[in-house]
Image 1 (cartoon, rainbow, N blue to C red):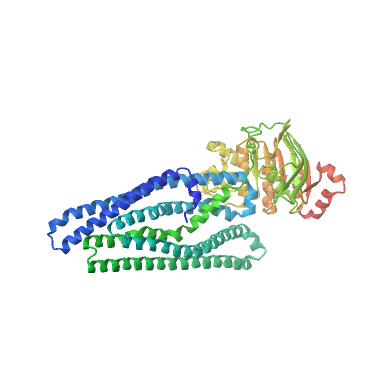
Image 2: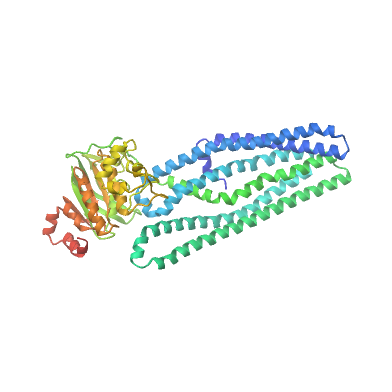
Length: 577
């Protein structure tokens, strides 16, 4: 339950030592509380005057208050650590996602990534807040109480020492059952998230094809599966809670019986017997408190493991071969790839013998049938994928690099995918994603160039209108215009990577958006992957991909003169021209 990876978190070891010391003090407070209460009760039992119990009750009140203050203090000590740790995890996850790129999102699913990066971190926060203090209390406080009981009477201490691990072993058995079901529940939750996101994205298409009702049954089956998995976890949780309460209550009753026999045969007096009996429930209390939140933190543990797994994924090294500052891309700059291969699984190449040279401000179209490798090539050019080591050479401005996941290179381009991501923020903040310090007037001019002015005038708060997740909906065409506005706002980035930006748009929206995109292409190096061949007329150079290979390349006019793959592709996809 206590993931060993927690000790690798910055500051966790120091915090563990402090919490352990506070747990020892809390254990002493529990002993003082039980002793004072027992002294007062025994005094009343022997018919002593009320004045004789004032002092013990004051000590009881002092010990009880100190115990509560320690509980508050431990939480107060833990909360800033949890906030700082989860904030750092969130930043590291977002940085990791940026390094892994869109290929990782496409591979694992958008819903899975959102679950891990957003809701997963929230579950980790709950996990840390609940489990750390209670695990330390469970490991420290019972020992303090047990040592004190052993000093008073070793027989009861020996019984409590023997029964504690037996209860834990039984709870571990139930815990493994709960863990297995919780793992399946978390996987089901991620699967449901993926289905939910995919359904929302494809809803217009499903409705147009008349398949929305048919697909609704699929959504129902996924959600129903998650409901059953959740109920299975709850059943195990209820069973384990009942079993723990039963065994701890039975153990306390056995201790009471032993003490009763001791009182009868005169081997123990009333005061020590009462102290042991009062301490017995507190001996098991840390275990019961831990168990009460065990199932509530299982998803947090799974989320923490998922976050650690993501952070452990390998990323490209040697990322500063071109320096740390953005490139000053000019008309004389160049990019060259020679015989470059790439493989997703390390065996079967997805891109083979890629040879291309781009110079200055050139428009390069990338075309091919679905699955030919267009998006893979764009991701390779963006540095989101790294080529197979030793397979080909890459150079930027004549300088060899091992890959394009270079800090300077990635600070020099805009990446515009099919579905630009819009953050839960204002429209102005979304436009200023690459330039967070931009003024509102500059943002307005960029929005106007992107053709957003008329739409902005219809918004209740203009550029300050909240959009993105959980806020005002944005159409596909508007999302692409927001992505273009980002490019208009930052004129220092002279490289543009388009990954089929109009693939999901209707013809009318695409035609209107095309008039906005074309001015952006001026004075830029452009890589434009598309299956809409009418864009090729705007390109200076064309790469034709087929099964991961560039089978033809040249200007549109040159390719049109040959009866090759380019001509055949235009004939096959004539409806898209």
